[in-house]
Amino acid sequence: MDRSDGDRRLPRVCPDTGGDALLRCAECRVTFPRSDARIPTKGTLTCPECHSTDVRDVDRD
Image (cartoon, rainbow, N blue to C red; front, side, top):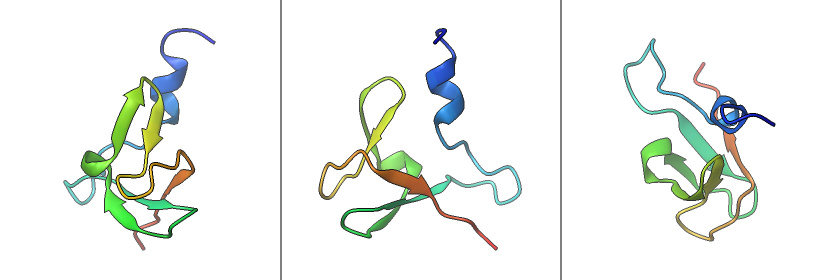
């Protein structure tokens, strides 16, 4: 894994909405903006509520 591999896995700002990507925790099911996620180590997002690392993008349809 090179230095930029971790960056490619992280959700990015949504260019179509101009806002943060939304994430959902698979453990506690809370939905939150990416800016609220904790990032204890580079490339790892953590839920601000339960501190799980199982967070996923939420599709904005």
